[in-house]
Length: 409
Ligand code: FES
Image (cartoon, rainbow, N blue to C red; front, side, top):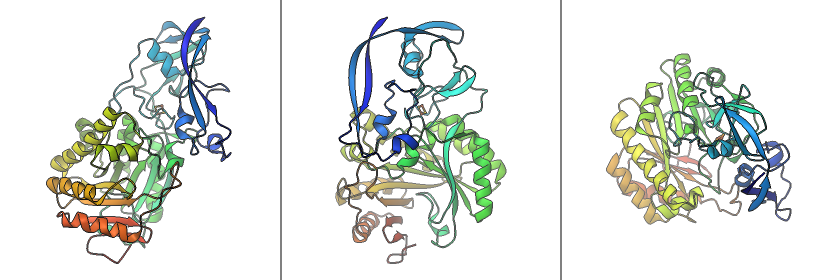
């Protein structure tokens, strides 16, 4: 036995409305007891999960990691057990073992457990378990939603291709995210840890079929945050490029973990259309939008998004069509901050396509009020006054783009 400090999550029945999210989308993999992975804690739309720290006597179990036997506390996740014996998870976005979402969606933390690829972040440790860390030769997996055809596309979909009538992109959405946005606009994807996972080949085939069925000019991948599982994403783009020569291959990312060498690899793999969403320019706004409470981490994410946007534009503007995105709601952003954003983009490239999304009530912010059309047009005006030439705003009446004021699509 060993005495350990454990994280335990329980249900707050006062807050639980029995929406069924934790039984159908974000499902406990703990086998009937909490392993403190926190996936459900972050995922519950009604915040009906309570976290507490507990001192407990715990029996030890044996696991074999790359042939070496270790004793680890029972009742924890494989990730926690591995960390306890000195295995280091790398920086999110780097090659090798990382654990960027902690939700069971991205599969970047997967290793071989008794011969099968499994997620370390949500899988409980078990006596006698055999773990192999090197999965380079194993096909990567990820939870994929879609494909579906899209009439508008994402923040980097070239605006002149969009007319609101024909389908412009076939898209998939990948589960798992490193942000915790309280108003997540796609939370059924972000927090999904139960849909069957796919290989890059399977996802690329399905997306290509969708493109053919709807005759779209582009193929897109969004999320969640697509960049979390690097090996999966690079492989996916390579296959997609080979299946769709000359097509526009669109990545929609929050930009938080992309590095220069990751971008280089993506472009090499065929990605020729990238949207980056720094979301804000002021740290306090960014923390409010993303739900990241660790100031240092939030600063790093925010700066990385801006830096990588600049890198993509300066290095690949001849090969990659780039777009930037922001999340507007007067509750967290003033028009002064919008102007600051405009100035920063103008200093990088005044012609850059900029899409401002009017964040509506969703997930944990069901009380949020969607900005009115006139508010969004004010945002557009402010950005254009700072010299930006390609501004699009999303509104409840549709998208207003460059030279189309008053004519949503
Ligand atoms: S970190 Fe385990 S699935 Fe994303």
